[in-house]
Amino acid sequence: ALANPHAQIRFTAPGGKLPHVFVRAVKEVPEQPREIQPHPYGVELGTLIKMLGSTKARRVSAFMREEFCRVSDRVANEILKEAGLPKQISPKKVVRGEAENLHQAMNSVRIMAPPTDCLAPIGVDAMIEGLSKEVDAGFYTAITRSPAVYRGHPFQIEVALAYGEPLPGDQPARCFRFANRVPLLYQGGGCAITKAVTSTSWRKYDIQQPRGGMPVGPLAIYVHMASVWVPFTSESKEAIASYDEIIKEIRLGLQECGRQVGVHIRKRRRIAEAQRKADYITKYLPTIAEALKDILELDDEETDTVAEVLADTLRRSRKL
Image (tube, rainbow, N blue to C red; front, side, top):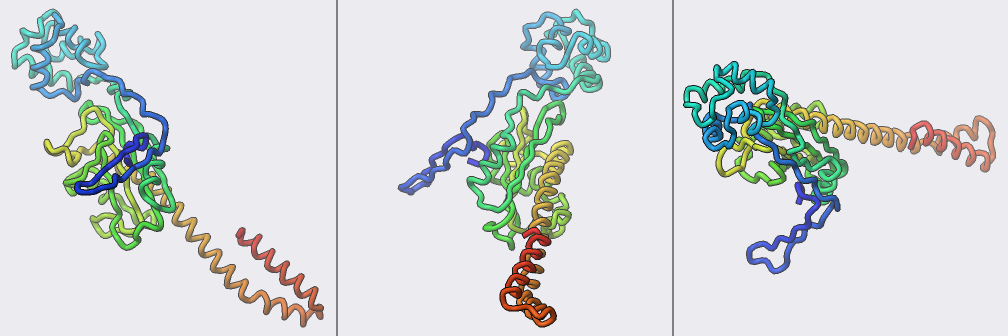
């Protein structure tokens, strides 16, 4: 429900009689991502050999252009030249040693990053709507990072934070992990998202954090990774592998949202401090008015007017 706020979900627990309904938060349906060919940087040697054997291209130069994205005639020629392969050779006649040379050349030649319209991010507004629908808090913020690339695979990180009551303030923050809108429920300790959260310095944003642990406070953390190839740690697909590029993007998203939460916390603190000082001054306004009455020899009506003026001046000076 958090990652798919456009859907209405009915869940009936085993043995339950009444279903729990997760209502729809947004009406817009996500855009359909576009299919793309694999990028040369992300193809492993075994996959490359299979592609060479199954392609319909008659020449290896045509194979490079048709089976991969971002490979033009110029790039294909550079790759073949680096690999020491002739352009006219049939892909099916490429032996293993030549395939290894081709694979090394594909990763050594400079190639444009893959397109990003193959991704399906949730979006800032939809994330906030979905999070506010399921998690009660006083403040919400979210960010969708610009697309990035790891090993030739495009990916995009999205982060949202919920802060404030009625979330418990004396417990570790709850972390919601998603990959391509699917929740990751187990193996949190080995996930790149958890590592990015615990390695972020939350004290900078006025949030308590034990060394090397989750932040403590009325906080909920929501991280989503959209990618054409999510690097899971195992076949169970419960945790994301800790690639440096992925952890960096998650941390940058957490830091951006953390700064917004820090601004919110400091603003509330200033308002509370101003209110405390105003209440303290208000407590002595009648005494001040009585003192002015004696000094200036005012009657009761003038004394009441002076008290009202002092109270109004206090409100305007404190912007309350």
